[in-house]
Image (tube, rainbow, N blue to C red; front, side, top):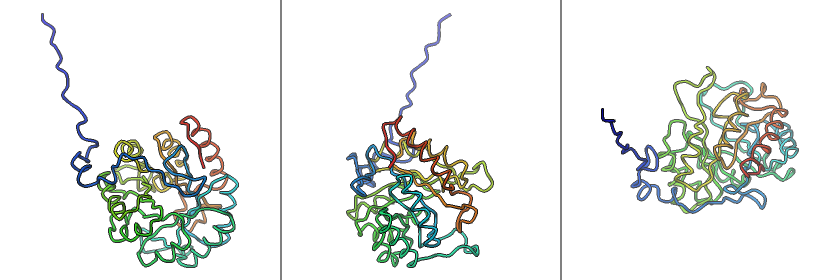
Length: 302
């Protein structure tokens, strides 16, 4: 009886990703898919896109001066150089808790003092073009939140500042759409772009309070087609503090170029998203573990 000869499969990865074609790379997102390695310098000792893994840490919102001082001291203790705090902070629903207060310009005044007194770099979110003038007087890095990923006029105006920009992927966006939004920033002449994976919407998130799941695969997938730094936000993705360490370690193993970690001295009293921040002890333990893990991949936490 003759043996059946199995034919070789004709399957091959002819396109760069599931939804990005070679034509897209050539004609639609040529700047976002540039093969030139991008290094985004924030200071002499913090550069995204190198062997460093910068940590961006802090609470979601700028609640008050006392809170931000506590956070700044914690970051300095752990040798973290970038603090986050959003003074202009939109929420998913219009019904806000009594604890929540959108601090706006007064929040930026607080971040001014924190920046000067603790020698920290500041990341804050830009939600409207009208806020840009005040924000750029304080911030070192501008963040575009997931909801504004395709707010094209906002992307255009933020790009014109020439500030480093963190562009968060929308929770329903494909990588094609994500890089298409990035192209709108790059075409204005600003190459200081950092891409952020912050979780996608899926049917099952394994907890009733979690709305998203961190798309770990997006990190190596993006690295195949773009040379811009890719950072991960496990706090917003999981919406659940006990999962943040595991997702942080997974992000480092996947090759992320930075991390956004939410921390608060008393998460239960956080005015926004109290389930996701790490308390200070948890944060310190996480930083210790990430320093150990990063060495395995010849990386350095800063």
